[in-house]
Image (cartoon, rainbow, N blue to C red; front, top):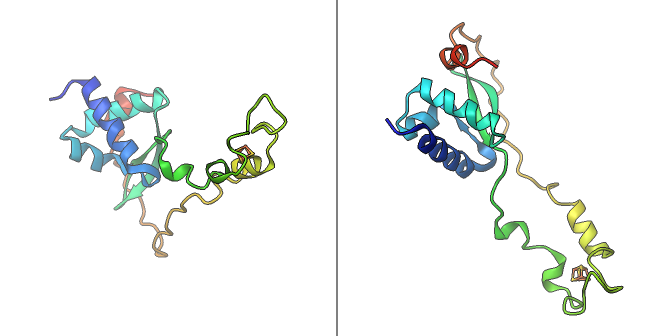
Length: 147
Ligand code: SF4
């Protein structure tokens, strides 16, 4: 069995790699070869450290968690439409002069519109959700580590 810190690192790396889609807790532990009990403890630790977000989700009649990264690494796609990249005034633009990023309307507009085109999660099936079973995927771990 891997050490807990190793498992935390691997789990965090995997969750970050899933981006906005996130990953079901059970799928993550299967991928990492960890037990459900150990996996639940690690995900709780990562959430307590503010590194991931856990959202309860009903899967095949059982409650589990979907894990999302709290922060995603920056990518070139996030700045590809920044107005500064093709700005004709770029060479003269300086925060200590009148032509400054501090007062640039183009840059301000771009910043204010960041995130407005974030991907939207696809709609689920229109069929009603099944009744959840009493047993929950993470019930054992949560009894061991109540919050
Ligand atoms: S802050 Fe404005 S003026 Fe300066 S480089 Fe960017 S777009 Fe151009």
